[in-house]
Length: 164
Image (cartoon, rainbow, N blue to C red; front, side, top):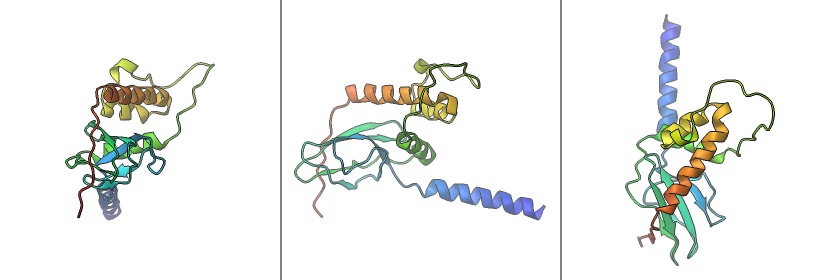
């Protein structure tokens, strides 16, 4: 019984520290600057070394998309991103960093049925679908559509870093 209690305590502690250690507020979804990589994590208020005219598209765990445009002084990540769901942000990062899954062109598909593309409208639903290997192609398509829809309606935000 003691071993079981110890194992459960250790598992809870380890899971809590793993989630708490992910301190990002935003993830880089796309960028024109080669010094920033897709999937990179950024904290609210941090300076971004973004060339003048360069752009970076960020996403928060809440699904907020922000497009930054660099100035002569770079840019700054806006405050208030808030990693309200660090586990979701970590899963999104894993999804963004993984190469696109290959698609089978022949043979029968077995396993769980994947949600329809039109049903994957939120980041939570997209990331949940991505957790099933058979649904990763559809989840990636949904993520691309989510990003495209957000960028079509997105007004760029130019935030120069504040001088200390």
